[in-house]
Length: 604
Image (cartoon, rainbow, N blue to C red; front, side):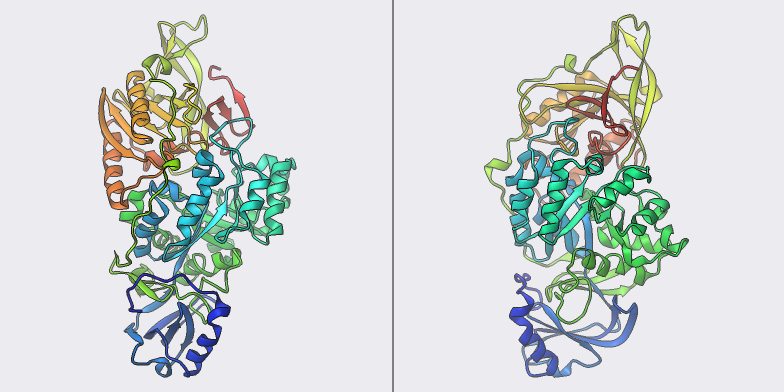
């Protein structure tokens, strides 16, 4: 096998242990030896100079001062020339679907950025296609040249009674999935009130995961650190990525959880929470870095976990600490420290050659001992993955929508204006604000008020072809022109969300996505300005990540031309139906007070 062939499926340690011993002892020759490296040892916290590293059967066999005894005529030898050898980076919590691409395309995009292990929660496709959809992504994950483990979605729907998506999963399905080879645990348990109330479904799913000896992912999206938080922790969640404050991170670690600090395309939660380490002095072993949600534009241009590590270092962490939080800490949390997370014998030979540790300047990326990328360019041969017909044609509107579907009738006697509840977008964060505003009323219809940054929002039911439309108001996008954006990416029920200032454009945008089978589209003054087709479950494109990123650039440009100034408005748009995160959301059942978990009237 040459240095740059496709990474083979990794063999179990016990199948190759004898060969690893023989290579370490000099009785057999290595497949690859990296010489003269600075060994970034995440176990001891040292950088050890003048180290040689030998690889055999896709695993590390020897890490020490001289591997000449392991070099034979067929051994590939790489001179690190004093550069750093760093463990491959791990993303502890993420959703492939948020990248707008398939698992294969996501891996193609992130491998050059040093990500060699991902822990994905496919609850987006689960909400559309149910357990068969999870299996599709699971099986695609198995054939990647890097490690992609899957967390079984826990909350489908995310909040029973407040929304109705395209599927329902429960303890039976969770127990079944725990036997699949790539399932590593239970995905983020978003129904935190259900856990605190001992909801039978949540109790059953967590119990099935614990019986399987796997990790229970958390999602406590509340600032309340009182009894509700303690009840949630007692219910079994082992990590949480929803903290936004220093005290959130500290509270989770003190309760035995892992605090996952995320930096995604629109979620900037590392800086505030990392102060629990840099200022409070808490033990960094229990903190983990992740992305949660990154769209294709971020992946292609800005990076993935390398971006997160650099950001953490910029917030005052030592480079070693930040790297540990993206490698060994993650591996230990998922009970995989014997497989990944460090450059040490027996582990999978996933590593980076890095010329500058503070900037994490990655020169080469290796997976299972094979070079997959160098100088920022992918070298691995990764054919596109085809999805079956059952995964497309999932946008079922039932009828053509018209402008009247998006008009909101004001209460009798409203006069020239009416007071409405407004979803308030918070820049770079997942939570929203519960606002109110007085909007103009003309001929009995409550209108958008662009001058005061109040747009129309609608949720269009797209799973059962009911033709249902829920209407509301949203603030924070800043649209001035007559425009509308529609998306079938609408966490977590994944109906269609339409935001705009013009009912006519809202209808055009919704119908357009019905025609193409899902995605994101932007209309302005009756004209289509940008379109990203996502025919796979209405969530993922079947095109290359670079092409999707280019289309995403066009979308962002169209939004900005219409007045939007948000850092990543598409990601903010996609969360407006996420009823498990406070404070105000929209669902197919109405306007949702996500702090008290109840449906409320649109008009105050």
